[in-house]
Image 1 (cartoon, rainbow, N blue to C red):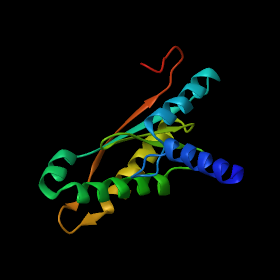
Image 2: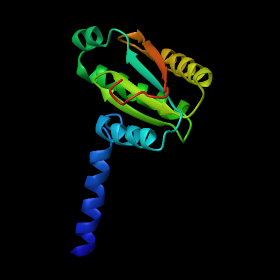
Image 3: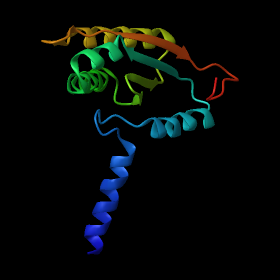
Image 4: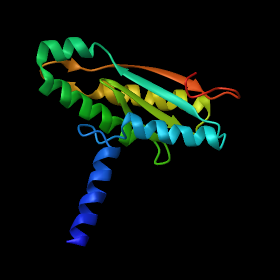
Length: 145
């Protein structure tokens, strides 16, 4: 029973670390990872993505289609980010990546992600797009800023 309990605890810990739908890190875990960047004063860049018109898509086509879009956007992040980058579902239709890439490289990553998402096409919706922002850590920044 002890091994079974340990296995269940590991499984539950994994569930708490990852968003159920997208399998990306949760916002809570992302913030813990980001805190470690601040503590060791790494230089890093945040890439933030927001699916365009997602509320309209969800309202018009339903949550099944919305969930399929969220899943594919998460797949695009997983497939196009480097293994050392940390990607998470920030909330709703928003995603965030922390990368140690330069700001110039982060813009390239954002553009690559934008193109990857735009390639997906849904019978009901057509092509989905996302908007991106890039912010580089600067000396004196805090998590809140």
